[in-house]
Length: 140
Image (spheres, rainbow, N blue to C red):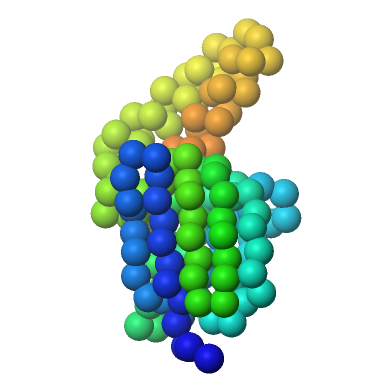
C-alpha cells in the first residue's frame, strides 16, 4: 500500500492545489470533518465550508474550501469546491475589509435573508483569516 495520497483541489474557475500528501482532513456538509489516510475506503460526500488541511513532508498546510463535493479513494482525494484558496492566495487586507463590511451588514440587517447573507460573508472572512493565521480568525 502506498504511503501517500494524491490530493487535488479544484474550483470551476481554476485548479487550486495538486500534490502527493500523507494525510488529508476536510469539512463535510453534514458529518463534521473526515480524516483521510492512504488506503481509505472509497466514498463521495458533500464538502462544507471550512479549512482543509493536509500533511506534506511532516508539515501541516491549510486550504480554504467552501462547498462542493469530495471523491475519496484508497490513493486519491479530489475536492471539487465552489470556492477555495491556498494560504498564499489570501489577501489579508481585502479579507479584513470584507469582515468589517459583513459586521456592518449584520448590524443593519432587517430581513432574515439579509441576516443570513451577512452571517455567511462574516463566516467566510473568518475562515480565510483563520487559514492565514490572523488573530481575528481564531475562536471562530
